[in-house]
Length: 344
Image (tube, rainbow, N blue to C red; front, side, top):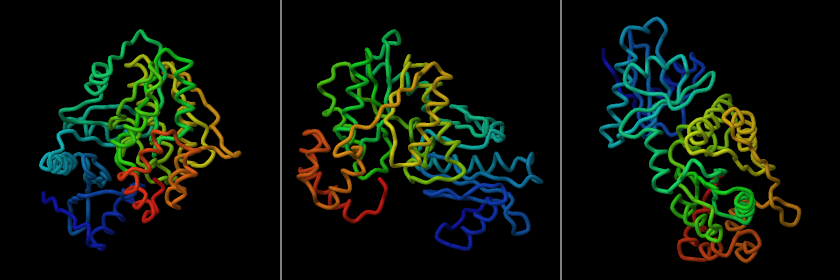
């Protein structure tokens, strides 16, 4: 059994994989850095890929299932991750593939009717949540609400939502999206949230981990892309929030802001309102804070920053964010924005 590495810079080789996946109603994902195939008579009969530590685009011809091919090709991809220093790997796949991945050591994180997220390695969702409990001194008996925010950057809109949650709950946990795919890097976003909520003693700001809105759980969020997979990604991320974080951290409320602009975030909110109550978590939908009859959003702030309208930003962001925007680091991000077409 010969496993071949695909030359991703070769359009012909890449198209072969894309065409093979299409037969399984699968799309070749963005951000793939390694792909392998197995052939029979020059035709692909199995393929698997990865993007960093995430297994993607796995498919095997039905006539060759049960021959040990799946284990061989997935072990190859998993070993590649290990060689690159990734000691924890994840896979988002169809529920029908669960036994295949279980057979090489993957364990379930969460699932929906159609898809499952699995993981393998030195880390796990249980270890991650236990570490959060310890590091942030979280007690299950305290009544808690949670918010998940990207804060790209932190605005008066974010602050308004957090202040409302802080006034209505004993403790509030803010999970800041940790994936570094936004124009404002995670460390800066996290720091601005901490500074912008320093006046609220019952608020704890926590890194979002790779289990909350990440490339594994919800890649569409970063692509701002609506496609057939969007609904399953939104359901999966909502299920993880309820089943894992909600139940294990004793969270009984989730605050979300109304979404007037982005259809991807709107569908995510819809999934939260449908799924979280199943895990005993009430969803509080809060109208967005407005300025001049327009909802305050980080995207408006980025647009004004891109246009160099610095003074106008004082109406949209707290002084802690504004001070950063006019700093040397802030000016560097402003320059990046002027040369970027990214939605983030």
